Amino acid sequence: MAENAGLENHRIKSFKNKGRDVETMRRHRNEVTIELRKNKRDEHLLKKRNVPQEESLEDSDVDSDFKGQNVTLDAILQNATNDNPVIQLSAVQAARKLLSSDRNPPIDDLIKSGILPILVKCLERDDNPSLQFEAAWALTNIASGTSAQTQAVVKSSAVPLFLRLLHSPHQNVCEQAVWALGNIIGDGPQCRDYVISLGVVKPLLSFINPSIPITFLRNVTWVIVNLCRNKDPPPPMETVQEILVDTVWALSYLTDGGNEQIQMVIDSGVVPFLVPLLSHQEVKVQEAVWFLSNITAGNQQQVQAVIDAGLIPMIIHQLAKGDFGTQKEAAWAISNLTISGRKDQVEYLVQQNVVPPFCNLLSVKDSQVVQVVLDGLKNILIMASDEASTIAEIIEECGGLEKIETLQQHENEDIYKLAFEIIDQYFSGDDFAVGYVLAQCWGRKCSAADRWVMVWLFYDAIVHFTLEGPFVYMSLIGTVATSDNIFADLWKEYGKADERWLHSHPTIVSIEILTVVLDGLLALVLIYAIVKDKYYRHFIQITLCVCELYGGWMTFCPDWLDGSPNLNTGSWLYLWVYLVFFNGIWVAIPGLLLWQSWLGLQRMHQAEKMTGKKLK
Image (cartoon, rainbow, N blue to C red):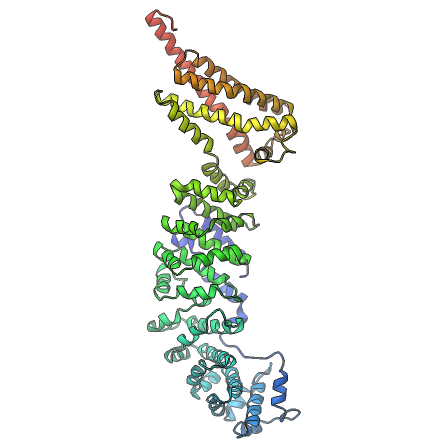
């Protein structure tokens, strides 16, 4: 499918819409169809002439009687009724060659000569498939002309015979009959309805299978598109069920009208016919997946129709193995399903192993595709609810987490914000969750406020020991920049905001040694003091808070005084997330704890004055 800037802008605009509904998600409209028809105009002309590039050796042998002679129409007409099969075939072939000339074929002259009934009669010759083929070819090219010329073929009673030839055991004869019918149908609604009334749709459907040659399949698709194209008047309603067939172009015209039209397509039973098309060895299936993405943007019942037809595994296969254009449409189909589908439908996606190939597209250069995939992954995680951790593990195991972390540096603001949200909500809360569990377990007899203080203290200690501890170790034996492990990767990412962390800067390492050893231990002692209600609780709490605040001040103040040469303040992500948010937590919470200690000491002093006793 050819790329189109207008189409992409329309699609991404719809994608960003926070209030997306079904209509917003349906991206493919009339302007898309027009553009695609322009890109494939040679395959979608209303009428086509069969003009060979060069004559085969077989042709030259067969018409040897005419070679080197100026063959007249009278001679062709006379020999076309000859009892000698070779002479008859040569004459019909000569007529076909005249009609296959690149410029100004003598169609009217041949019609006036009275050859049409003879050519039509040749279509009946089942004993001579070569003669049938040449006669069908000649009639095809006559029908490719003006409306009057096409009508001449119709009035010669050729159409029923062309329909009969659709059942010929000879593939070239079948294909030529399909081509001729396409030209006749393309003449207008009257001819279209006439051919439909003779039962053309079912034989055409039988040709769509994985073994059909690609050129034949394209002709079949072109004919069915002609059946659907004319809208004034539209095809008879009683034949609509037959017209809805497994050709993506025909389906694309029929699914531009909204959910009701899509439902009509589904009710016709046509969706399962996409199975052989998606498994075809030669055909490009991008447009078929595109069509399916329209259905998955519909309602939940329409999504279920795609699942029931067994198409989800094929979409996922194209997501993993298709060319980029097909992968792109498959990504839209999956992402749309995560928005429109029910929880069990999204779970089915996961069961079909959609996550790994979905994550693989996070490394492509197309920003729209990346955003579609991120949105789909976030929707899957949201739908998983209590099982989100399982999905997160799958994402991490297939390398998706690393790609999402990298996308936090993406130049597209929507992408890096979405990547940050996924990391923040589903991949960075483990330490805090552990702290919460431990606080609830150890602080059963404590007040609700103290239990929340303990949640923070457990989290604080875990971060100091498990994250900052490895940093100190790497900095003492070398540098983060030269280390190669999971902790080094984390600090290298943070080092993009403050490069001092990469190269064992003395000030940073000194502060971190104090933080790991002193602050980590003080956090554990404070937890004990709170649980046991020790008299020294506020002394430890104030000491810990002052140390945390001092560490933050000494981390940034020296660099600020030098003009911040090591800080990356030009990026929203690095400035406001890495530097301000992550470090601001260790300013805001210690500040609140200092205020709590102030109030606690104040209450203790007032109680002492009232009782006249000293606290033990």
